[in-house]
Length: 74
Ligand SMILES: [Cu+2]
Image 1 (spheres, protein in one colour):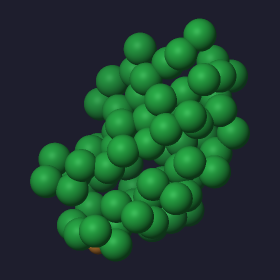
Image 2: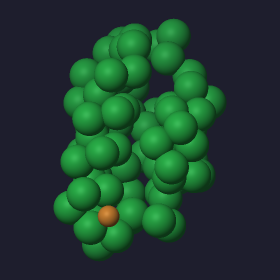
Image 3: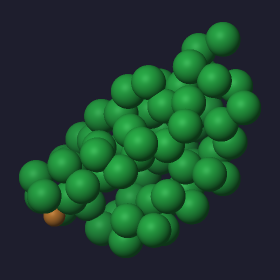
C-alpha cells in the first residue's frame, strides 16, 4: 500500500535546505520519493511501506535540523 505524508518545517528557506532534506528523508526505510517545496516550506513524502511511521520521518527531520509538523497523511 502506498501512503503519502506531508510535513511542514518553518526553517526551510533555500535550495540547500531542499537538497539536505530530500537526500536525508530518501534514506529512511520505506520512503519511495520526497519532494520539498521551498515556498510552501512543505515536504511531500511517498511511502511504499505502511510500516514507516510519521514519527520516524519527523525524527529524521529533527536529525537534519528541520523540526517538522505533520500536515496530513493518507
Ligand atoms: Cu536553506
